[in-house]
Image 1: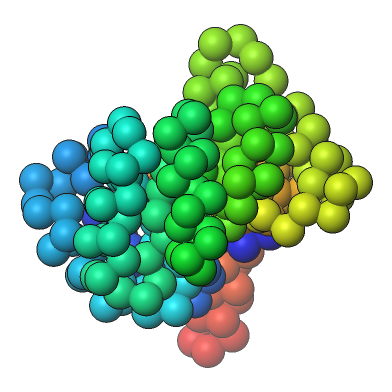
Image 2: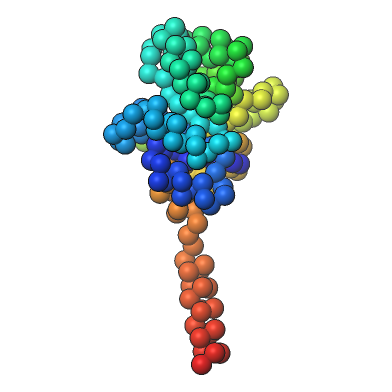
Amino acid sequence: MKFFIDTANIDDIKEAHSLGILAGVTTNPSLVAKENVSFHDRLKEITQVVTEGSVSAEVISEDSEGMLKEAEELATIAPNITIKLPMTIEGLKACKILTDKGVKTNVTLIFSANQALLAARAGATYVSPFLGRLDDIGQNGMNLISEISAIFDQHDIESEIIAASIRHPMHVTEAALHGAHIATIPFKVIKQLVQHPLTDKGIEKFLADWEQANQ
Ligand code: E4P
């Protein structure tokens, strides 16, 4: 499973990138709104840091014509921009047209296996099931990853599954075990993945032993 970062914060993106683990970035209108910056300028900055991995930029239009118009402008920012589309009838129409043009797409706000299958058949490069938001309403988000993974394997579907709406480290481990190709993770959770109390304790002991031996 690969790691994407789920943020529009440029400092977090730069730091995560410096760890050498980053395969891409996802943004959404709520994440961009938090930053108080121009959407296009921020995407430009992000694509200057993450030059090879996918950078998802979400459209806000609700009709396919509007989505395609936005996609056209977003695609001029950098070659690694992926167009993020909502899982709606209009989103699927836009997905098919963009796929035919060779533009990469990420169909977002997926909450059922049928939605994922539809998005894949419309040509989505990525499908994004939202784990945390399902957990929030008392449904098991991880079951959805398993179902989508089983269906995609059984039918040789190439769309990649992005486990989204990740809230804690166990989501990451379980998403990997259940067949997600990618997890898109807030920076706070990426940092939590690094930590283990025995690692801290081990470093403390090594340093103490070293100091004692060199007194
Ligand atoms: C994915 O692409 C979305 O940006 C994101 O994971 C949504 O997460 P949230 O449910 O924490 O807002």
